[in-house]
Image (cartoon, rainbow, N blue to C red; front, side, top):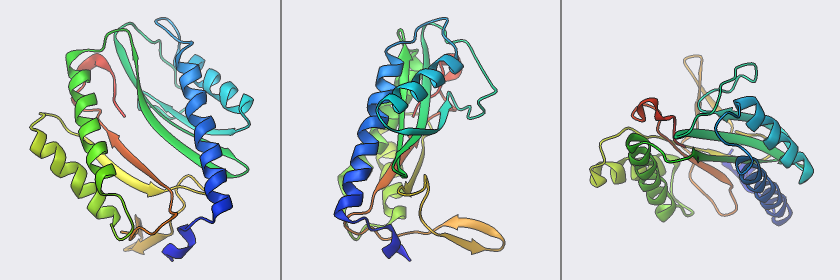
Length: 205
């Protein structure tokens, strides 16, 4: 039931606490890296900064790679999408952004603009009574109207005691997210990812 996704006032405060620490942690970590640093360096810095702020790190995707055994060297002019989750007293925060190291390429700049167009359009309509599918349609429509020639994957999910906390729907053996109608005090992640049109410049979230 979508009723399970509605947070109490205390839960909202815990979610805010988790989210602020999560955001501050990646901003602090990003400020410490430059060309020659590795993906592992960035992960280690984020995990340390999150823990210092009282959050328990859960996962971090760097430039589309979630496997912590994988590594890469960060170069000048590269853009890195980061998608990171940590929690405070089991309440999860989910944050995705783009870190530009030096001057990003023309392709990356285009994708950043496209991602922002989608994200802004989703934010403009988010309110009780709107469905997940309405948010996704708004993002896609705004991108089409903008005429920016790129591809952005738009998605949304509820966040809470789990990274994805909405109940799944089983259909033909495949788990699909509910097309949930939003209600007051739900907490969501709105995601706009561009990875196909950045060329060798990196990835955008």
